[in-house]
Image 1 (cartoon, helix red, strand yellow):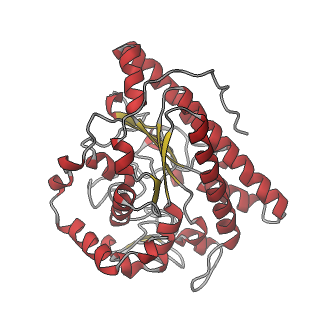
Image 2 (cartoon, rainbow, N blue to C red; image 1 turned 30 degrees about the horizontal axis):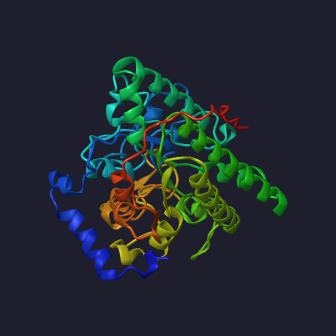
Image 3 (cartoon, rainbow, N blue to C red; image 1 turned 90 degrees about the vertical axis):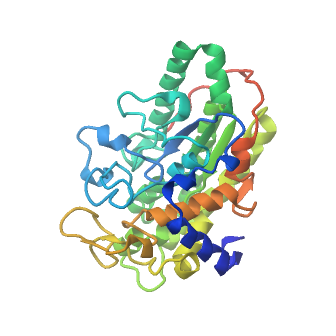
Length: 381
């Protein structure tokens, strides 16, 4: 693997440079795709740019529309669960796009893509019934696809959809739900849940393919059991992590990778990149100094043993310098953490993002869409 083998000097210099370069220089035209490429984003709070702001009667814990979220870059809360920008914001900048707007934001323009992600969402609606599950995100994309055809015509809509990149980060909330609600699950029950997760995720990808998607950027599930909030809720000490969560997630990531690879041989024109979010973030947690951070066990904003609960909700404390912290709240990295992840996924070796890194995936030209037989809409229980 990779991240642990990357040299300290390279990572530290990259991190320090990212703090010194003016914001306008982030738009590096020499690295942008050769053609206009939209982004359609699905998943949970790692990608959510504010969809949950527009959901009525939702718990405050699934919104980030209050201080101090957004305080470093935007200087006001946007709905992003961090102090600034997300991975997908940095990727958008690299390809010359404005930040991809949330689907529920009034008056959005779909030509650069749409962000359907919802904080707290899972593959299964049961993971969090309050928010927009992956099934509902797929339904919302279908609404956008219809609008595209009405506004720019069927031919141009198909072209836009085929050249676009479809990025997904989902699954962590499902495993949190399972571990919390079935603490005494047998190994067989755990394995059955993993298989159901992978099967439904694969059906989701196939349904997007049937709607014209050809290029997929997939973050595997992160190390949920080692993040400050998980360790705080389990009262774990030292370097302990929630091993049940980690083992299930590792099985999921391995099985999902194999399933996606199999799709490549079955679906004409199907291209993908799987970014190893799990291994990279775990390495950042275990070796924060290698990435320019002073702290990875405690979060910048919150309260409790690891300052990992209820950022922005009294009582809470806020660190003086978020740049020193890997995590802004108990679950989510700071903007510098997201910047490093975005850079690694963009330019990474096959051990980080494979079989293409994100830059290579965006540069690929898709084959023309020839719609196959309709898949049935996946059923997520």
